[in-house]
Amino acid sequence: MTEVTANTAIDYAAIGNAAAEGEDQQSMKEGGGGFDRPLPDAGKCTVRLMQYIELGSQKPTNPTYKAREAVTLRFEVNSRKHMIVLDDGTKVPNTIDVRLSKGGKTSKYGKLFSALNKSGKYNHFAQMVGTGAWLAEITHNTVGAGTDKEKTYANLGDDNGWSFDLPIFEDPTTGESKPIPVAELVGDAKMFLYENSGINDTQYKALWDTLYIEGEHETGARKGQTKNWIQGIITDSLTFEGSRLQRIIAGDSAEGLEEIDVPEDADGEEVPEEVQPEEEVAPPAKAKRTKKAAAKKPEPEAESDDPLAAMGL
Image (cartoon, rainbow, N blue to C red; front, top):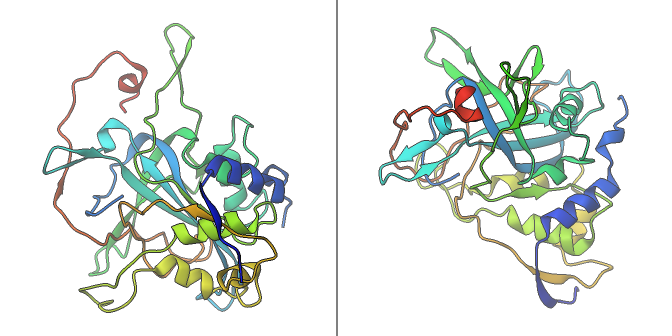
């Protein structure tokens, strides 16, 4: 059994740095909540990385593909025209989820890391959570056009690659570079690093506990099923049996586990339970939420002469 000692708070920055020690992704080798969010409008936007969650090795639905380590990322879209105005006047950012297989530098996963790391200061996705800020371009694609299954998806990249760039505006009239302000993260930062050797057992268990979603679905096709889909996918992964995570969850740790205060998931947001790597399946499904309240699009705001207005953000 493990020994419980004094409470400490989760230090995401420290864990991100530890993750980079365990897996330096610069050295890859080739190989919100409680309401429905509308589809984000296409066009330029500002974003922050809100979540980076590793799901372990997942069996693909297509038998011609081999099992691969899956990852889901959530970006918070906080440019003015993408803010959602609730009935009480509160403005909240929209979100876009990206699901991928882990891979080398030339994979979509590796190219995403490179696109987000144009500053060169990151060695792991985990270091970007809550701190990284970018310009991006939202595009739409429609699947099943003309059928009862027609659905439109929002993406942060297309066949030409990822759309991320540093938040800098190049003024064509003066040649000056101006930093573009990107709002701080509104939603809860969240990360989970599967079997990363750079984090200790206490950090690993604390990250695991943040993934828990309480309750069951009360309506719809999944009525009576647990909402705790993320932990469920990870424990169902092909590599969970015999893993370090399984041992820690069971209370079998060589370390004396400290009790870390785990922040509550204030928004209780949820994405579909069936998570497959983006490289192997159809476009990512739009996130579903556990609570519903009417949302409306924001009223147009007056233009100004700041860099964001100049770029239509």
